[in-house]
Image 1 (cartoon, rainbow, N blue to C red):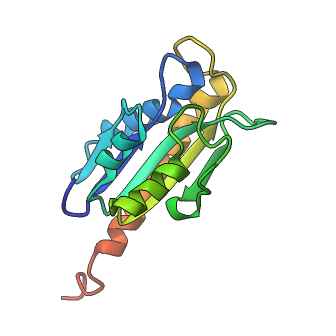
Image 2 (cartoon, rainbow, N blue to C red; image 1 turned 135 degrees about the horizontal axis):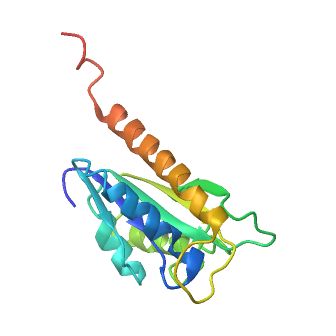
Length: 164
């Protein structure tokens, strides 16, 4: 991505129940077809994340979180630069976003800004479809991501653009 646009990255596996929440939310955002917003899913390794967010002014990652005790559907928001390099429970699969961020810093492949939305899961066992509480969180996280994109876009506008 070039030009400082927005990269939305939906992580997860839709064949592992709630682990697919990042993909489902990203797909909903893709349907909005915003200009300069690139939505990517199907990433299975950290290098795929780097490829998706390189050159972006804003990267938004949506992922499932496994925590104990869990409140399925609860959404957490983190700035990318505040994640620990070992964020236990932040992701329900093998991509550690904190370590990926550290790698990107070393390689000079950081986005301008980054935000992570993590949705707590109930069931990440085999099977398709989100559990009801996690499914109800999808439109909420989509709204949160849309607000994040709008804030970013507003900050990118010239402060004198409306003063002609």
